[in-house]
Image 1: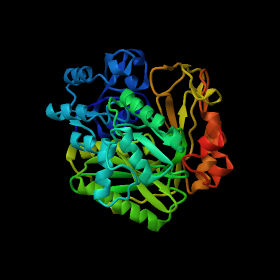
Image 2: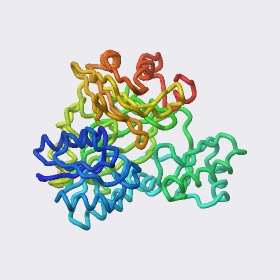
Image 3: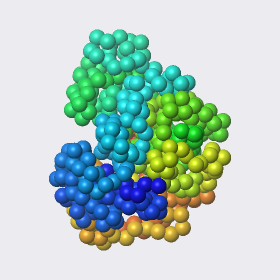
Image 4: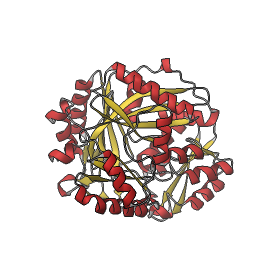
Length: 445
């Protein structure tokens, strides 16, 4: 096994990776910015090294500085977590060229599946249903209008290299089409340094379903699905598994086609294949070539430590797991706790945490990096922890989440804890009568 791994990340995912490394007996190196010196991931790691200032581009995205940290600490491998450099194929390629193991897929696969247009073509070639729309990138407004004529309204304009709702525009009225197309291209250039966009049919009431996979040279297995349909402006708030709306026949078809595609492209590592689901049909959305924020719900129902498996696959090239080993049990729900004020349009709420009491108890898990006296800075993503509750069934998981949210106390900053109490007790959530547009359309928040 690896002797030393550098974690190229921060916050709760860095803590999560350090814990997995400790269970493997692996030494850890935490990188940090100047404002993260007192962060929990720095305190828990065996070594730490400052890689730059608070701006992500100067620290957590600073490839030369991170490469220096690897050299100084003699780390054999790098775990990128999610976000930052986790899907940066150039970073993975540099590590490959320097015989440093990137704990994730090859740079080739990151590049292949990171381009939304190419990924869509690959999915179609290997038998996954895809959304009707442009075959590739749309260069100009003339070509865009031809696709609009063929596809019909409503449509979605998306950045080819994007994610997180950036460079994404919904067009419901032909009069606004040209303006939104040009705006999407400008945003794509600003956020991803690539103004290429593509167009596809927009679904009014879809669910967001994703399949977790683990792949080695020897085999590809799936760890069943997650339902991530509680979203606000394309940002996930609550995730659960299993999806309350799927039957076993549909599941099997989805899993078989997903595993087939991942096998055919020769992918290795953990990954998630995401789908839109509406009117009894699935459509390929994208593939994330990294661990997901919501991976804990899969872990608690399957009993599989996805991070430890990532490390094992990176080291050995194979997965020791077989499909028959995966036996999901019960139901799990995750609430993302953010340092935000929902009453002020989710304005970030940085500050120093005062009293901090995290829930515990039977089948209750908190993945976080906060403590009393911890300073939440305004420089990074506002998610500060995740609360995961597991029950024998969905009803018990909701009851346990209710109890756990009631126990959760974070003072000194505003958080989304009270919002989650409202959401999981909402009639539509309890009855699973919602889709990705629920919160934006009905103004529940």
